[in-house]
Image 1 (tube, rainbow, N blue to C red):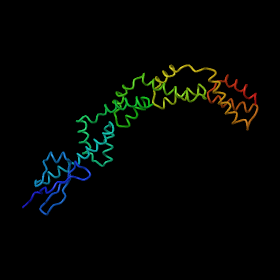
Image 2 (image 1 turned 180 degrees about the vertical axis):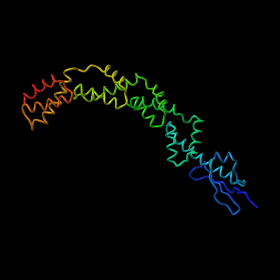
Image 3 (image 1 turned 60 degrees about the vertical axis):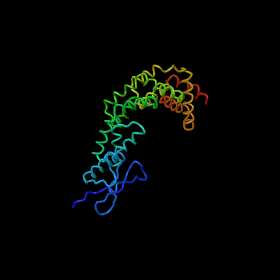
Length: 274
């Protein structure tokens, strides 16, 4: 005569009070059967002395596995919003199979816990407030996180042009303050390159240079060329003199972006003094 397995004991797991171990008797004495989360325990009305067939046990184990995968996703989401790709990649690392992941993702979407457009909007707003990245780099970051290009473009509406200029201008002013020993031409090139590397587009960069305050003029440029020129003199004066020394210093200063007139003035004033 076939005997259905019977639940003999239900115990709380030591490491997780919301999970339960189910012990069964298949007619040969008590043995551990499987474990379930509290939600499934209640939903299936599991209790001592309850008879339970193999198909129900299999269904419970499968549902519990999916529930554990869902719990992992919820825990991962508890720190911050995530894109679908981020969640999928995380669950793959946790060795969940594709079927489980698909079911969990469907549930997360239904519960409005994952939404790539909202994720993209939030990330853009955060980057605008907390980082020095321009829109191109922010879009790249979104795409790397699995957000569709069209969604990324829509999210960039939260990074308006005036905010781009504001951030880029702030960076440019800091750069000018810290690089006073460079020629104006070299400083402009450095700022342009830095802003492009940070993901700012040409129209915003152009606007930044239109808004930058006028420099102090010749005095500032003269201080810079004296600083750079004297460094070059110290470098070359042990190995060259006269015309050769002048040419080496001229070449070095030209490469650093100084004008011919200012270079000639420096050569006349400083090398004649040597």
